[in-house]
Image 1 (tube, helix red, strand yellow):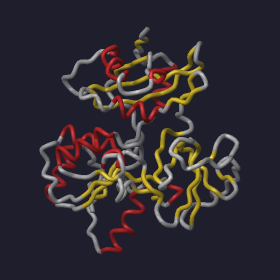
Image 2 (cartoon, rainbow, N blue to C red):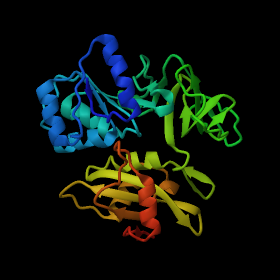
Image 3 (cartoon, rainbow, N blue to C red):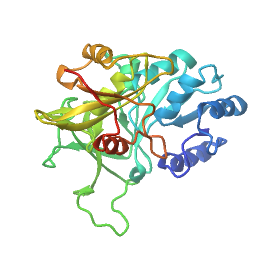
Image 4 (cartoon, rainbow, N blue to C red):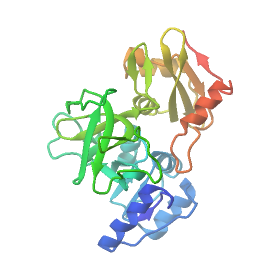
Length: 317
């Protein structure tokens, strides 16, 4: 098992338990998490399973596509939403399935796994893999509205995910904050819908959801759709003030090396793939999306940069 996630991250805490239970060896790449060193580690040690955040896997896909990954049987991915383009890319380039997992430090760490169901219905395998996943045995999950009322599992209703279970925290050390818990349930801060068969689809973090003219806009869905463009490497969407609609999305885009694309061209491409009122008027092309220590998009840095006027924002009519 190749443990790409740093050891201070919750995922890396859970990995050794699973490895020791089945007698698997563990491979640690230390601080060398870039495509080049990881490619060599994979070819030298021949792991059969690995896991990482989307940004690390995206780096491997675009900068080490010639890596021999034939020893791997699956790649776990979590920490943030997994783009469809990443799932399709690993299948087409490496012949590998990407399995999405969801959890957090407080859930020690896994709550849901995104294996496609036996009966996939009208949806493709990738359609199921881009969903957050189905809750695992031992975890109870519900979604609640702004009033704290549980919402139905109909695939339409949105609410904040609340979870509870024997390995899910019930309190914080020396912290008494009623905003963190609700009637014994851990409030996760993730906004999602749930299908009748228990599959969860996270649409945003509560703090990142954009409310425009009274309607919700999912920054996660917008980001993943934009990253489906063949010229786009990364995209992060943040909410910015708007005189007419209170708040509107600002799309911050990183192009692949050697690619050229205008905001108008990208918006036109996006218009065929998302709701009209979701289409951003504001665009910024940047060299890199800021990231946290574990490789997640750090949107608070982008918000601060925008507030200071450090982003070169183009506003379309």
